[in-house]
Image (tube, rainbow, N blue to C red):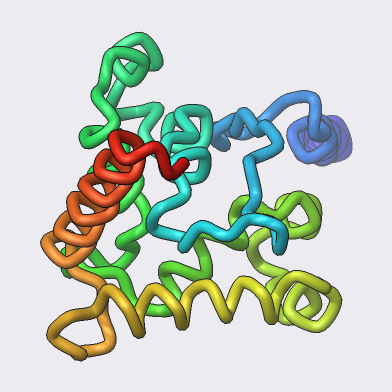
Amino acid sequence: MFWKLTASLILAVISVESRGPHHPRGEKIVKRHVHYSPSKDNTEKLTEDKQLLHDTQHIQEHLEEVISEQDLSKMTDEELEFYYFQVHDTDKNSKLDGLELLQAILHTDPDYEQQGEDDTSSLLKESSDFNYFVELVDQVLNEDDTDHDGYLSYSEYAAKRRLHNKKKTIQHYNGNN
């Protein structure tokens, strides 16, 4: 009787532990797509890059439990940018520091996605674009951080976006695309 009970217990433990990756244990299934990533050929500043800021699939990955995909598709550009800002504010202080800005860009790097978020040290050494991404972040903080506290608040970001959009409109009407 003892041996039957022991054998049954061992078989139960083995069957539970051998479920394998095809039987997730309650982990969230993450849908991934290849994100738009800023390139060295792009002359726009990071906070002026509409393709980056309006990447609805990227935003949806972060907000899938909060906002449905259908609701996200109905958002205005300003709402998309607000949520882009919010989902990358990891410490929830309503400001983006340089590391949060960098993390938002690295999240667009397919090499980073393949390596996983826990392996950032090897990514930093291997990514040929890393220095370029750091320059983009530095440019944003140097030009948009108007109170020079080392953070980009949403109000600073929104003010610079409005100024940029106003300049683009003036250029368009003057015939300077």
